Length: 295
Image (cartoon, rainbow, N blue to C red):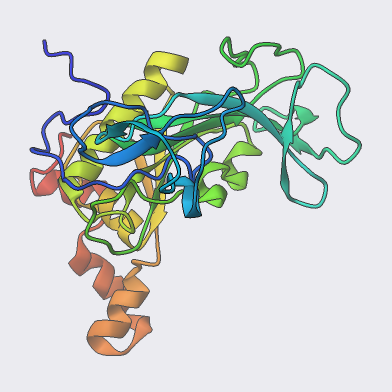
């Protein structure tokens, strides 16, 4: 048994350098110092309030005192609460067990419970990319590091993201995918990573590896989900369909990379979507027949 570092890699091979850290831009603060060899992004000395001379997206300016560099772009894990407003926005919440804001929305879970729409939101870094883990939190929860999972329906959604990029960056996050309303409102747990966003890189080995590591972290923190559903469009759909790492998803929902789109490209006729779907071989049964996954 090999205990791989949380920075990776496991099986994807040598990691890209240079690699641009974006933790500050994502609200996680500066990356952690991991070398004094001027490899990676410079990290500045901070005052007692966490302030330092910085420019755009949180990078130190020439006035900053550099205390080291970060090549792996790790960050301290952040767990906080947010709530959904009646206007459909997300707002920070200091304590779900205290008096709740007047504009907090409610949601009805799959189990039929109507509860204040409060979410425990964890963010950090895995395999050098920024990950997110979110689920409903009850008003009885007092410590985000000791989660009360009573509102979790036991099921997990992994939200992949599309785009096209060549890598060399930690990537930028998507708020609507990290806090995926359609799933959270029903009691699903939601995981997301910039490492499974094709708009960060298009290395499907790295993406599969990242998905594996993020799900492992979820299981270590919250237990084994009843099942995991992947959702994602375009490059987010391709990452699911390639099935290069198995036993991560039990179900997958594709969007944008649709049979209709394929038919429109090949035959300029979206009505041939069924023919395109058969040619694309998108189903689990197709993958099994080709020997790509176990039955």
